Image 1 (cartoon, protein in one colour):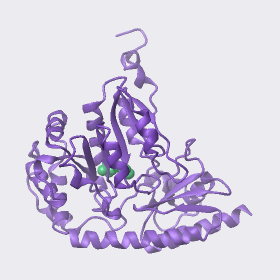
Image 2: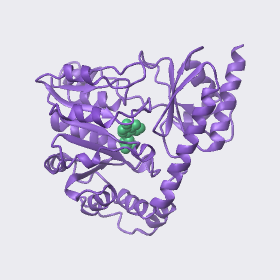
Image 3: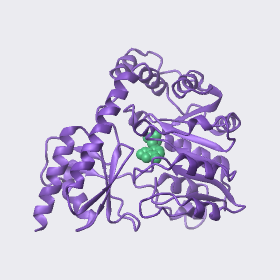
Image 4: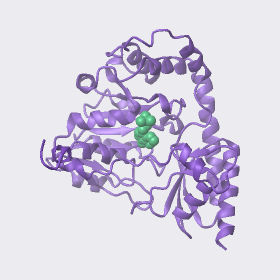
Length: 367
Ligand SMILES: Cc1ncc(COP(=O)(O)O)c(C=O)c1O
């Protein structure tokens, strides 16, 4: 053991690595609230306010083989997901949340020193995954409306570029990237990951193109539309060759039997789940309208289950803290790109009413 202890043996680039900020726990929020209300309204992680299908709970309570490892080859799961997407099972690989798949894809393509194109501001796990592989994020900033600058992205490609990450619609800004723009990126030949975590709320997908292009990958999740965030169920749609490599490098039992049951039951209940998605989309549009009435906020149109707002007067941190005082959690990143911005998840109609009232109260407190 070296003199300075085990820390000296850690990979140097990770010794000062700050990690990913996932926000406060519910317990912390409850403990620090100044005006506690009945329960916490959690609108910071784009979760589904309606929960999961009741069929999931029922099926789990009847399952009697939790002592047995799940199928490492994901045979049933891949077939179920393939049926949902409308592709062959050879295109599908499932993961413990789509976060894990972002990590696996990065491990597959990125060696130390390789470059990955990212369009900031965007989902921070992309940066996180590249850092863990000791790759280099090449940031191509979005324009003032958060659209991707395709020409700049193409210019940024070098011999070392191994991946392009594109959240579509983007998190945190909620806007989609038009299909012709995605195709221009794919035409460069660099592997492109289109992260469609919010596709059920958006309706636009490039999945049908995976058959045609050998460098296009699509990422999906059950966390949002199916209300299964805590089960950690993600999956990707890949060219079969890439799917094969990912199956080889993933940990053997990376998706639990419980998660497989949750997928099976959710897919038997898509009518109910998509009815809820419709309600969330309607509520998103109402929340957007209500936020628009507040002169010092600039909400951006969203195709996902959250609304991104610029705070034009006062600070985003004040809003975040004022809401937190009332046990309402929204997302505030506070970094240099997003310090004037907040992201509010779409809840039930009563959540919209409470949030808007609270924002008005915070405004009154300022005067
Ligand atoms: C764009 C995007 N991709 C992936 C994820 C990760 O989802 P999960 O790991 O729950 O499947 C999120 C979660 O917020 C997201 O916004």
